[in-house]
Length: 239
View 1 (cartoon, helix red, strand yellow):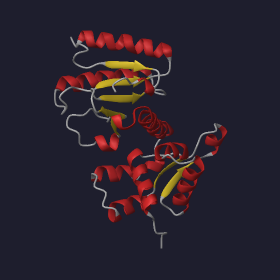
View 2 (cartoon, one colour):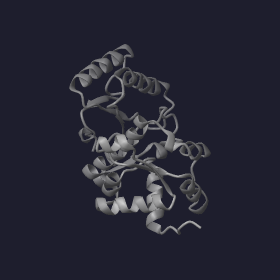
View 3 (tube, one colour):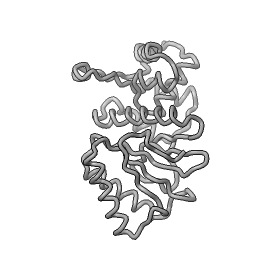
View 4 (cartoon, helix red, strand yellow):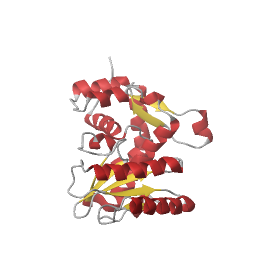
């Protein structure tokens, strides 16, 4: 028989469902607890079969933290015992989380870190939707944006983390946003602005030039919606 979960443990499983992968550091910042407490929480859930853990030799050599994800046992528990209501397609996609690529997993971890940074910066002035929470939003771009930030008194914005992606992939994503805007199938009164986070100065310059060209070619203006090419997620200025 599996160990009975308490309310805090169930809450942590739901947090991992929200972000897909988690590290002790991200959980500590998200919950406002110590790193040691977060690590202990994750290890107990792992030991009792509720979490898978990715931490191989290469991670140790890079001083890279372990990534935890929901096991089949945890998915079944959340679905049957806590009555979490999400689409079957999402439940099914999570069954293979232990087999995803390193780049994909690292991206999800980076998205959680960005979420934490934005909440620390803006607090209750914003609501942030992860990919899980954006699922089902009418007319939204696919694949879903990294984050959708909804300030109380300003325009919404998407946040895309692009470090580690080839520039041609980022450019393709920019074109997809323009196509999505022009389709006019989205549900907002105003289309959210798009923040593309890229640490390389030279890459940011190339992307700004590309955006300008694409907007000119499409006869689009900043009054329609804007791309912001920034070096870090904290440079979002919508609040």
